[in-house]
Length: 178
Image 1 (cartoon, rainbow, N blue to C red):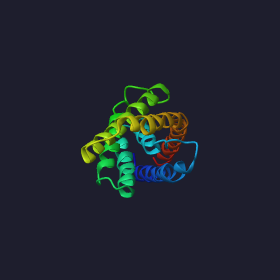
Image 2 (image 1 turned 45 degrees about the vertical axis):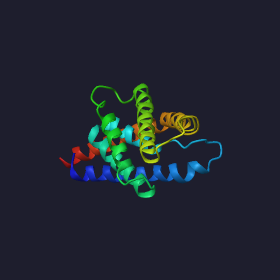
Image 3 (image 1 turned 135 degrees about the vertical axis):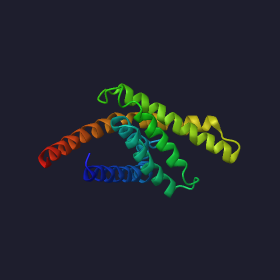
Image 4 (image 1 turned 90 degrees about the vertical axis):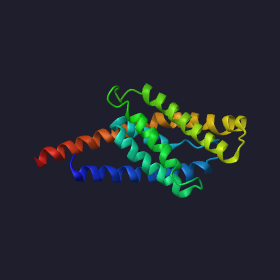
């Protein structure tokens, strides 16, 4: 890939993650019928990791974690670490599986959301010493996993189709430049 294309993609990732962060933190909590907000940053991170590989997953995880670390009071770097590892993990499946099937992305969504919530629970246990697991599972983890899974069905298709069109445009520009 040319340098301009790489920079353009990184800017697209950053803007998309900023938009998802604003939706996730400002708009979704105001919707009354939602018990928990879907984790859009997680969806974008695992989707790009799965579509383009571990490096892209780490870059998206870095931006998503940076947004969360900047605006939340957890130790700086906690969200960067979690999202980057999840983006890298999902990127490991790029070569072996087709990315237009919905089965593996949904499985990755559930696995990533489980590990994200498990990491946050472990952090809370280490920090506070005690966590009400029944409350967390019933009121936070399971509703968030459910809504994240539902939103993944729509968002993954949008991201996949948009990125296929961007790839075609980039290929056409590369052929015209040669």
